[in-house]
Image 1 (cartoon, protein in one colour):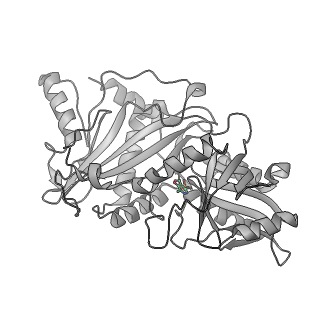
Image 2 (cartoon, helix red, strand yellow; image 1 turned 90 degrees about the vertical axis):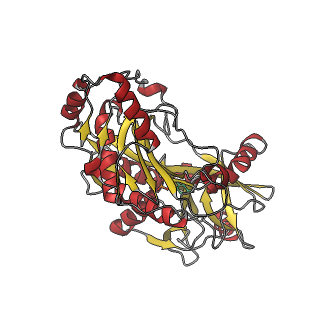
Image 3 (tube, protein in one colour; image 1 turned 60 degrees about the vertical axis):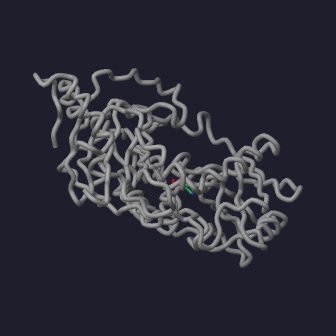
Length: 408
Ligand SMILES: Cc1ncc(COP(=O)(O)O)c(C=O)c1O
């Protein structure tokens, strides 16, 4: 791994390298994506860091990003960590015409011992590779990409908030860049990673949401790309989300599917219901991974915790609106919540469905919602040591000092 320093070759050459590392031309290529080939170009103009209490989701970015280009001819170019800069892609790049794009969303936390850890990052690497396959983008070594992401975080470690309410959102992104029209597999691609410090999802305790459940709008269907994290899944949801907010007074959309109005996902979260089922058992139920929903890392974690606790029945099966309505009438529904990286869990208090307002009693106790939130955040901030957390580097403070002294 090379860290460029100010030398006699001057700033112009360094700028040239920084530009081309982001543009995939100058770096020699390797057939596999390889951490050892990493080149690091540090900023000479570090940006002021926002205050923790001023952080809005996805608005602030750290000083550096990671870029790796691929082409069918050369394979993977050298990965490069460099100052955040605009992308330069040809206007015919396939991503701009056929939406060949995918991304991940994962988080790093400043734990109570001051070290930075990631929450189950290999789960995101695996999901990213599955999505890349579905998007006809080239496969890569997830372990190597994770090593590169950890290095990027180490370089920008001062940006990781020191509050147990804030975190570092990590956004790996992968786009098709071949400058040619025609719906076909791209011969060129760009993988880049941005880091964004983020504030608390809930500033002052849980804020429950009201959902619009309108079966006219469908997010995914059998055979669709619903289980993959592609940008193309999200664009068509924005107008519906806007309609739910502006015209219907709801905060999120409850995505239904099928003639029986199956509940699938809440906005960009997986859905859970905690209730007394038809057999009179206390049950946590969530829709199965049958091709309509994104396999969330939070969903998987909550299911694993519930199985370990072994205190109530856990089921992955379809839930219909008819069942929810009957459960509510019979006072059997206790809690409903969404689950995802951004919020961990988000309580649901109302569902607007076919002219009715269904009142969900989640907040009367929020027993399980609270327990999940507290337990998972205890793990994430290192209050409960857990194998799900992966250290970014042994001593990030020292590494940050070394790199700072090498800035040019
Ligand atoms: C559609 C959708 N469902 C569910 C989730 C939750 O997934 P995760 O827990 O991995 O953040 C997300 C967020 O990434 C999402 O976009």
